[in-house]
Length: 205
Image 1 (cartoon, rainbow, N blue to C red):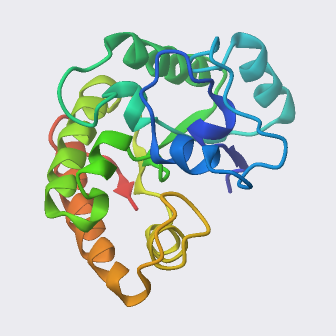
Image 2 (cartoon, helix red, strand yellow):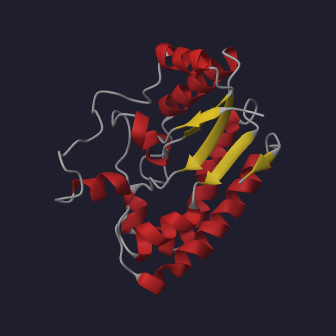
């Protein structure tokens, strides 16, 4: 049995070096965040040796973190930020050096805003862009990571983010949101193919 902890990129990372995500736009709307708190603009990936030592001291042997799509590929497509990948590289190595197994979530609802402005998960093209992004991350991490989550809680993202609008991107499409589920499933398939290409993972959710 494994004992693990988890985080999402938007919970533990700052805004430095990252493109704008749908969560940034959503949280900036009046009344969304009571005190107006925003990610620290001076902090990047946001894990240091002390953080990882705390995980080791807790005795956990697995840590699920998410990679930020708008950090790796700020516009959702186009240029890749290799410095961002270096940060996730270092995090992966730091976990393994402490005997902690890295579990990597490729997507925890932080769609690059530029893709959302083009239609986001309502468009099939977003699944293709997600597959490209997954391949970029896999090329850097799949030699050391064998536990992956492609899209975290896809139903919740569809329902709360696109049908009733209480999470990002804040749409209220009701049954018009079902296209999101279809395109997320396509995105999962594209990501799984990318993950299996360099080093086949033992499983992917």
